[in-house]
Image 1 (cartoon, rainbow, N blue to C red):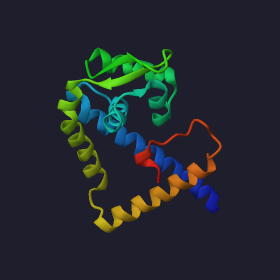
Image 2: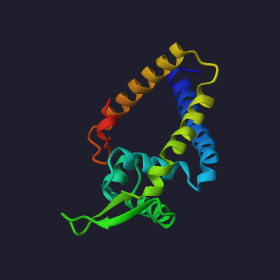
Image 3: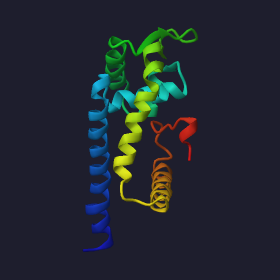
Length: 160
């Protein structure tokens, strides 16, 4: 098996499988709050910067605006967020957190921490640091490869 084959068959599959398992476990931890991992990812961006437009949120999440609209519909129905027209652009809506979201922020963080603890069980602090360093390098490489893609937008806090 060539190095290329190893990367193609192992690295990509492992990345995908780990991401899927983390998301599934996160969904289990969030079920008691009536949320999914995808909804919490959206809420996390709003915790960082409340009042994002649906287009900004879609770009940060790396999904289409139609998918974000459905996600916001469900969050709005559960009284986590509210849409309000953008005062500067009547074609846009801004998404604002409601008090229920702020009240649950720590519980959501606890769920994320539980996923991280389960994911990193058995790894030393040095191994976790090495893993994070490697993941940041991989992300940087992929961002460089996608530098001409206008859909790739990272929020300020994630620009590493």
